[in-house]
Length: 143
Image (cartoon, rainbow, N blue to C red; front, side, top):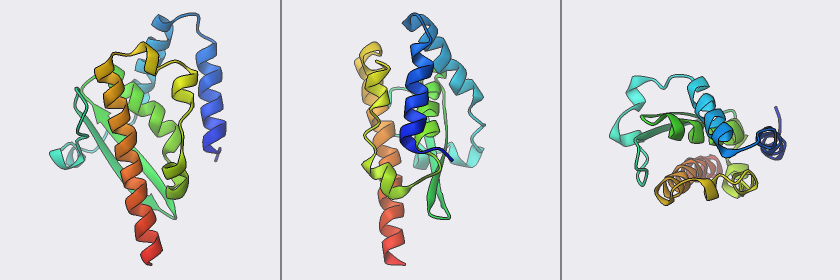
């Protein structure tokens, strides 16, 4: 499995292949369309991320010391944003997720090319993923 930095570098390289933001938006939407379907049991308020204008449901699960995420959204673009985050963070150890700076987001210019409400939603998604990592990290220390 690739490290988070390697995955982030690949994402930046992929985005550098596009000429403009219209193509980048389309690529983000396509990433969301490739996201596996989230089981219906996780599409409840318990898994809904607060602070997103669109509905986003996120489920995290720890297996063998690593966190795995799955998600869905009612917005095709937001689903693509969460797919980007899942590509980087899913399958990584909780401690690494907690310390992740996710610099690829600024390197590809995503934050600068989305509305403030979407940027706030993106931050909420990251915060929720780090909350899962914090919980998993504390759980591991108690064992």
